[in-house]
Length: 105
Image 1 (cartoon, rainbow, N blue to C red):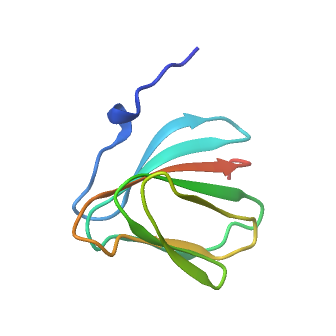
Image 2: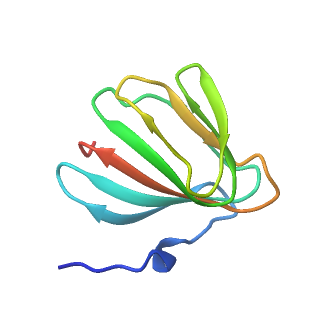
């Protein structure tokens, strides 16, 4: 059994948003995305995968389809397969997001 501590997967990069992989199988993956102020995950679409975002720390602007909302700690949203989605850290603080995607690309 693999047991993890989330604090071990919260590394940042000054160059771009950092994806820290926690779990991965042929059907699923789970990452912690770490955003410095101003960093973003640009709008994109997964044709065959659903993605769930859960904010661990900080605030960010999340876009799914045509909707945008600011989410903070404890908030989450889902981008169903085929929906454009993005994340922007519009604040002066770091943003940490737990991300689940299934099936694995």
